[in-house]
Image (cartoon, rainbow, N blue to C red; front, side, top):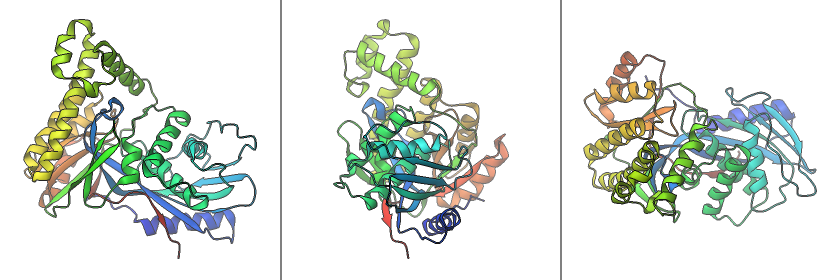
Length: 393
């Protein structure tokens, strides 16, 4: 009942077919891939320098291509949901001037990565993108594309290979070329993901701790509400500004340094909305640390309880949930064998993530389908590896 999704070799084969169709006989020589991610807990904490607990997904973006002799770049996407046109041709500026963003929007992520690549100048190339990460689903299709493309460029013209710097360059690409002031989580876990592990990331120090998540009796169910969201609307930047305002009033560099006691003492200096936003972040950072400890101990019920608390806080204090996500979480929590469920990603649509016993998958999917007013898509997932170069046969 869960959706199947193409494997990495299947995506590579599809990208190679499209490459042949677009560019004739010449075969691509270089390939790379990078995963999307699901955040188990720790939402809207990354740009507040807090903790997050994501895992890399088996849903990935693949890039195949070849270096060319001139400064021309051609990129084609096989992603059907991407805006038109699906092919872009542009020249690299010879004077080092920036590559301006524009239309189609999907190409801005590529241009941003080229702009911030750490071993300039980038050579000319032809490339094809194929992805199994749904767009606008809160599973980080953008970071998956950025990191896959950066890893592709590393094969054409190697940089120093520093992984943290790769994640930071890809984050910068999203800031400058997609106008999304995102935190570091999505790019970081796409680079550093480990099979069989979630990753507890300290978004201030950029240190990460792998947390084992390979119990065969346990699965992560992702349910896509198929309600689309766009984070470049006013809501995401507004939440970030509200958090920065709260930190400033509390006299802190970021909300990472604030406690609930600090918040309560300053309550009369904060607007009601700013107080709510800050309270979510401060409590969510603490919840995330507790959840990582619970996962290490195999305390899945405790982990699940923290997931539900996170969702309720995102709904009531941070106000980034929506009716569809609330319905999905409520329906999942009615099923025996489900430990916890919550919205994941930026909000306003997208996906929920549910921790459950492996033998409860079918009844959970059935129950959610019966209760949910929309048409959901289900992915049964396990933690997967991060970005990597691929060898082409």
